[in-house]
Length: 408
Image (cartoon, rainbow, N blue to C red; front, side):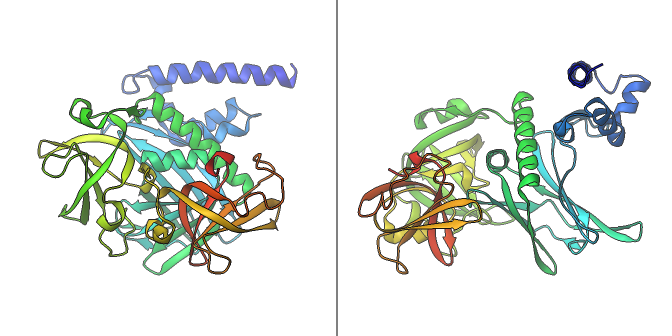
């Protein structure tokens, strides 16, 4: 039998196995079903079925925990770094409606993390995802070495970002400080593909709901729905949920007649102690998330700034207040610089003032690959409109763009 025939037969076998596996009630299956419940056995079985496929390590596996009765969906472990002294791998999993990212391995990071500790994921678009530990978690000794398996909560919006952009690095925090890990391109691509497959599986299983675009006045008709909604911030208040301070943004009408309240915990907003109304008041914003009832009023909890987009143009001189936010901003290109960074065709536009006093730097990566104009100094002297997420570059605000429609 040819290699192509083997691959085709393998794929058919996998589809038949997956269909049978998903539609059987695992609590009622016989001996073969109990065999499949073993995590090591199911990955071994999938590996045998897909000897020719690189995505065998990324197949999502569904099962029901017999104690919690919650459906568990998870990827296999995706290796990110491996040396003789250190190992780092990642796994994505969901239990019921909750989504987690799990970091595991051994080496210098094998210590204890607390409830307030976090991990930062640096993506190729220069955005940073922040995930938080689910509790106090410690390493254990296995075969004369310290190994760890740390779990962090992951929002649907952050998972979507992992599925869209390659991972460039991870910073983890623990009782001793922090550790940084660089991710090579091949492992980043494998994680991106695995994240996309996992995200699509959660959509199919209705763990993540597709966004429904609705009008602001219709919020009460969409309790429990995952929606996309826009409105003007009419007021801001503060509350305490027993764990952290909350900023409450009222949309549409002033409190107490607001159409929707956005609840932003202190771990999400990046206000650096400055009152958020200075940044959001009277601005039109778009928000994505699930609408719930709180005190008989519709509310949306914001876990990540990926859920927000500021539609009202931001002034250049106030853009430092919006680090981490997705914004729309106008400005004149004072100068344009072209650099070569490894294989990147890198272009940098200094906005508002000349370098090094520029008010904003626009970074265009892979310009030639992404269909940006090849003309030299094309943007110089023009007033442009820029859409993207604000980051800090050497202490200066900047926006990285990867598509021509982000700057015009």
